[in-house]
Image: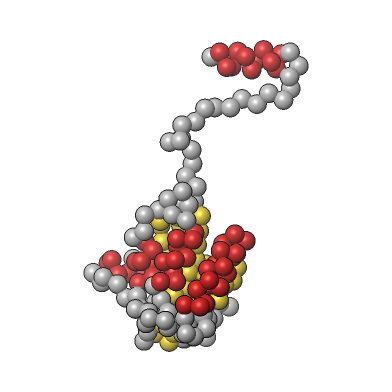
Length: 192
């Protein structure tokens, strides 16, 4: 009450730039959320890997980077739409950083195989990072450059601005969990 009276008094005395502020506890503050989008082969295992990280609020599998609007799985499997199978990750940067997500991305697939992860072959299985900000692009490029010396072959991962994301059919969402599969990520050979 005292604050309101003081603000009213200041306003009455000609102070036109008075701004009322409500004190907020950290529990009242809206959670900060960011998006990250990664393609690292079959999206089922990639989603499972990211979904289980502390600080990841949600994951969705889908398609990005192609020419067809609202593609289906059957469209993407033709390898003619240009889409990659991707996972869109919503995360709280106060709990997990984008850099930590990049570390998970780089360590859970082989970034030196062009349009291939294990037995899966086609442009839909390419290694790609779709960035949602200039900061994400800088971090992804810096990490790629830093990791280049670790591999015997060149890293083929592309880093591009995030295009439209087309959510995959519902049966693909949390596929491994629904079907009791532990994982299907590709084990990366040492120094690939």
